[in-house]
Length: 146
Image 1 (tube, rainbow, N blue to C red):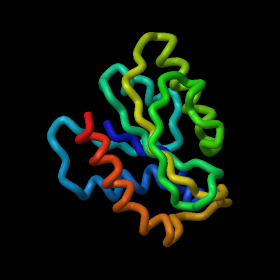
Image 2 (cartoon, rainbow, N blue to C red):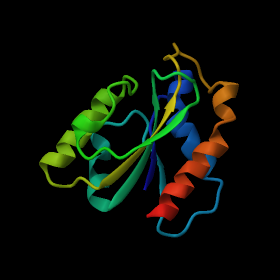
Image 3 (cartoon, helix red, strand yellow):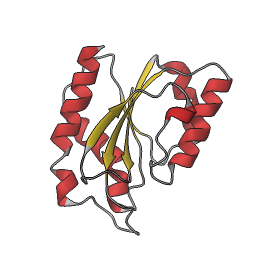
């Protein structure tokens, strides 16, 4: 499962969702599914029991360069970076719930530094639009390495 997270009403904060939309137009093997997970939350918990591996794509704040892509392999909710954007308070709760019920799949987190959270703004910046092919390539490489 490739899971894009983010709030598309807050500009660059929606990069995870926009990346999944971009990747839906690409060819994937039959065992790969893509999902717009929006701002996360407990409605995503059943996915954790249905998939052995989830690649999450999400915005992060901080770092030196907007558009910087990082790959992390968090094993527990406490391993998720503190600089994930605000909707990820719900994501941490989701991960903790999956841990508690014993349904935590292997998770790879692909983060994209957005610099700062925008106010209400639909669409992502041109700088991040240019990063969509690189995000796609990063996810493809992760799946091939498995």
